[in-house]
Length: 182
Figure 1: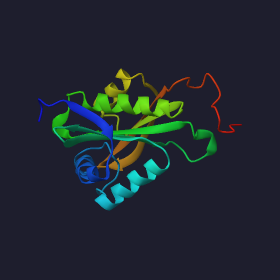
Figure 2: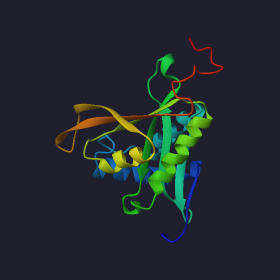
Figure 3: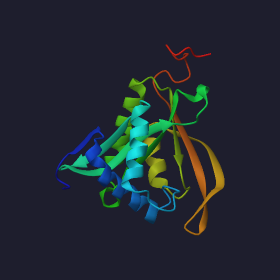
């Protein structure tokens, strides 16, 4: 599988079982997600459908027709003024690290969000020991904008949130278009 090229594409319903497995691994073995129990495929499908219905991008990376990672953007906060800001999530199979899969997913996600007129992207990195995610985001123009110490309890320890952000398109240099923004 490693010699085959990585293909980034829009999620399909048939990908949800593999996505659920990748996410379950992250929930069970890392602090990348603060869920304590992996959700079943029905819940992952519901989450995916909700994001797609709201117009957010949801991507997968595959090698030789096997899903090896996924990424999506979603609502950052519920209030109207935040509607041009998205939060990203990127997950890659643990044995696939270091192959540029996360980079490809996040780069494509940034491009998709920019084309959909979002103006800011936020990364909430759920643990200050997740330097792989921090470095990935830095490579793609994110900068650390804050840290919330000891915000979540998982795996018998308190963990920080690292907040990173980057502008999309014109960022905050021009007003949003066509939405009746105040």
